[in-house]
Amino acid sequence: MGFFTSHRDHDLHRERPADPQSDQSDPVAVRFHAAGPEALLCVILGGGVLAGAIGVVCFCAALKKGTLSQVMPIAFTSLLFGVLLAVAV
Image (cartoon, rainbow, N blue to C red; front, side, top):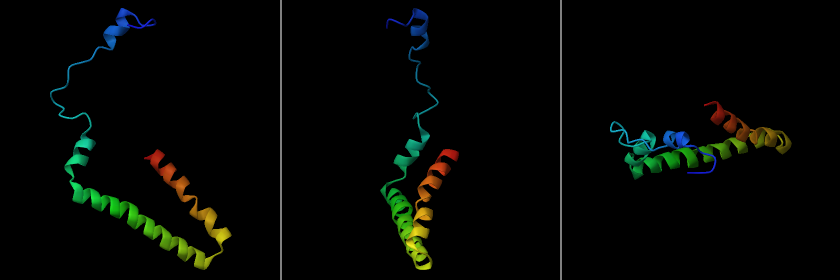
């Protein structure tokens, strides 16, 4: 027991017995491991590689329409929008 804790605090932080209803503490982790390597590979390739390729194509198409000084500020705000969407959701 630490210097700043009392017996009452120690009783509050005792470990509780495991809940027999829950097999795992995180159901998302269980589904992630149950997905299998083929499904995870599709998510990685579809989410990362395909999205990156589409981004490069859109960036090159924007460069054909405008100058680099016009395209770059718009292109680099995607990080800001990604962070804002992640925080909002």
